[in-house]
Image (cartoon, rainbow, N blue to C red; front, side, top):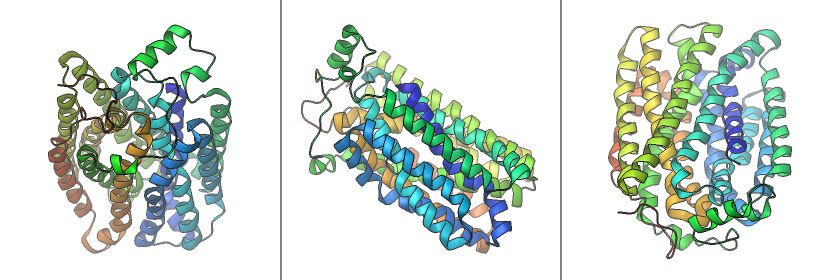
Length: 416
């Protein structure tokens, strides 16, 4: 179950990064300026932000098996349709719809793991899944660069869309919403999962208790911190290839290689952050400190890496410090996505949707504004602003308490 979810996360980021890697070629072919390309890239993030909560509700209503099959098939179709667009308006429409379709990916995938993963495995599981997404993102720029040079910028969208459709078919065939519905686990494994998750055999369904969820102070602090994360993440995912090519002077082949390096560093950050927070919680018995400290330190490292990456005149030193910054930023991810599982129980999908809504609103504002900011003030300003948001995220994380379960009677693990 975990590794199938990892592949899904890889596909989400492959389908996102393909357009940022192709952006310089799309701009040249369709005659789009930097600000207009920002609107195109931002269209995805606005659709993705606005439909987080409705998509999570769909996952809680239908169950992850059916819901994730539907949305992966839908966003894969819109990925392929991007290849047919001929101007800025049509690109914005199809990328907005792509964002709407992909909005449920992480909340529903989080929900899909909530009845399978033991509490002591949550940080690691979320670190692994998000490492998969960054690995997919890291592999995409060089592949897209090769496809563009060989076949033109439209070909990658057809190819990556087809990959998602194949995954959706296999997910529906293999996944089941609870261990009791699947033939593979034996009774001892099922009982271990039941006892660890509070004894329930079936995933809870029905009306989502939004009043209770939205009354959680931890959720609001987490959402604010994830806004800071989303703001910075969007700069790298949506604009790094353009930045390296147009400001740092790399050609298309070099851009494909150097744009992948920070994302590979992010893979290491995802794995390390998730692993450390779980081991810390397990050995210390203090879940609150384990989540809080790892998240805060990751944000602080990101802020410290962004500043020299921006200030240096050496393109290769820029990439090196960017790797450090993105590594730190990604250390926070496994922690952030473990907290909804810690506090949300069977409604972890809805809880994570609130967090992810805020994160992607930050990303939508960042991506949309960057083209206009660069036009008026140059490339350095967006990165300095990103460093400020990372510093703010480090402060906010000190106020997160993952030991406070939202629902009375929910499982409490390693509380102190």
